[in-house]
Length: 392
Image 1: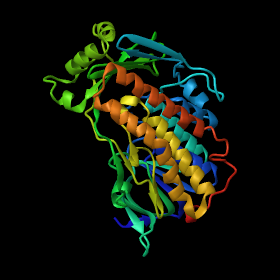
Image 2: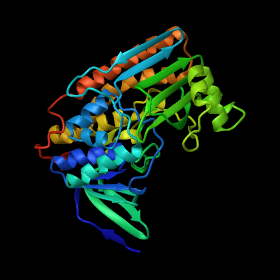
Image 3: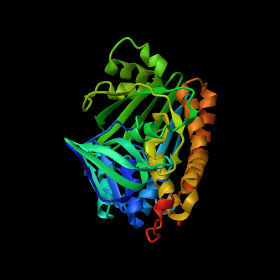
Image 4: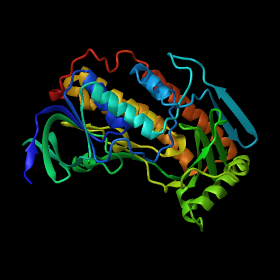
């Protein structure tokens, strides 16, 4: 079937998960004509650790979406407890910048809230559409996308194409986005869900060659994960359920005892270990947000927070920085990302002693605090600021 040409857009975004939907929301609020596309169906789930750190909660609050997360039954998290060899430390979540709790929504909740908000802001949102390639002008600048919706082929022109289409990003591949930094190691994580109305706060466990966590989420469930190095998981002789139990017993014997005799909700879900990276984030007519541009190991549960952060940095860049927008976006993203990326790589390696893991977690906390402080800038993503995306 011949291609169908649509009207020109200021921005076309490939991927309507949290990074892409957030970018569409903010750009549309700033007056851009936005097309948001996703290959999946509306409201589908995806593998996730769920936990939002303070930076992400601050952004949802600032964007007027936190009340929707709460209304969906997402339980408040008012403390974080670290269980290290010989020491247990609980940190209360103190009210700051209008936020007095953290949250860990299911992706069927968070992604839907963001996509709906993008549509309400004026973005055109279409599911079941795959981006298959990019259009360019004679200079090589990206000028739009090609795609497919069932049997129908699409050709869409745009001043800016945003890849928010995950680790296997079509946009990143077609612009040959370089990889500036690669993680030294990867963890492997097995996730299970349990009925656990009494789960209070985030709980993180670290022991020799193993880690675990309990994260309260929607529908009276807790996500209970067990993690080890990817290499060690490959040596596990049996299936995911047995591996989850053995790793959990190493990381948190008390958790293994408590959950080992209870029925899980659904099968185990496995992240087998994938190398983290920091790719080039932008170029003439294109930019990457979320996992498309920056994938960090899930062991520190910071992926959603970074995805929302990058969407906001990009929206602020194209609204404020004119011809230097994409270069400035990448510079700020890298400045905030590298400290988190590096310490996460060290934690994911599982090559640390009981003393060292405490130092790594302190370094992680300091990097997250700097990130949250950066995202409280009230001049970011001003809905009243009009965009000039053609110069992005």
